[in-house]
Image (cartoon, rainbow, N blue to C red; front, side, top):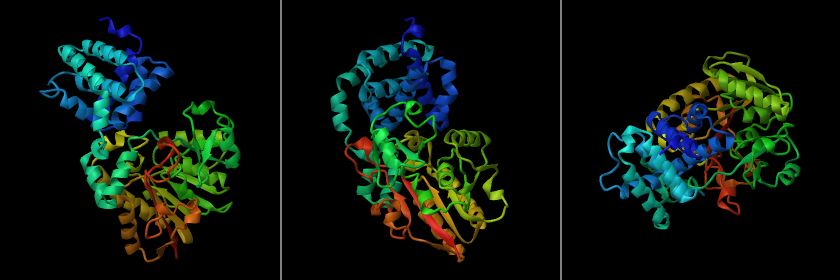
Length: 437
């Protein structure tokens, strides 16, 4: 077949390898792509195509797997090497991406030929993919159940937490391409105009068009940084005054550190990951902002208490599934429960670091109450010296639906409706603001 030289084949090979590795090793898609990409010798456009194929596959994995399984009478063949990830990558292109069917099919078949285990199933793969292409409209018309692309444990968790209607709206929103939001140092209205963006009521700017971030006006000058609109809210809750000493715990990659520094705070950014802090340092340098950077496990950090503490705790990240659809397929209830214990220890540390009269904001990008609401209830029951300071709608652009009955922040992916699905929604975030009495 001479497949190695076919234009576009290396990108498809990388996409299938990423899909396979993420599902087998339960690793993050972006980290896996970054690790594997160098060995494929791709240019930037082909590397981006491979990532787009893999992300699309995970965004619609339930629909793709159902479509494939329904057309393989005996299921996927055993001991067939990379057959399954090759089929999933090709199906993502045929069903959901603007790729000519013949290119998706031809390159997948060439790829099957390259492995002795999968080459025995070339005719099976060819028939399957041609049938998917023929029946695309029917497959998509039948994929109406919003939970089809959500693992069962998550669907059940959201139904229990939010009710069936809201859970279905969350699941449905995860099937849409995510918006791209930025935070600006100042002059949000001016930058919204310059960048052809939508100025959100919260002060974030949502870009109307997909484009290369680094080539946009203001990037090189450090006027703004990419940050999900919901992720920008916890800093607003701290109501920072210039010159205040503020600790940002678990700070990398630094979007919230940048917000705090831009407000004139004396920020100390703490994270135990050296490589992630290097990214934070590089981001601050581009933005022309300064912060003290400490490489330390926050649970072991002993210093003089701060005026305010922000803890963006490590979590299952189920609130980011729209942006990172692999999260749905790599995380489990066990992962969540292990993180709950870590969050409790970090919250204890954050409390020690908050001076009397100071503010503590705890937040996670998780939709699971165990990592949010329940964490704070447990903490407050054990700490009579802390009290909740309820959030007012005016603090978050008047979006009252994002405040729960306790006065905590609870953003959900289907909120914040705008004119198109891609301009709508935001990540699922929880935040609670506490005062040390």
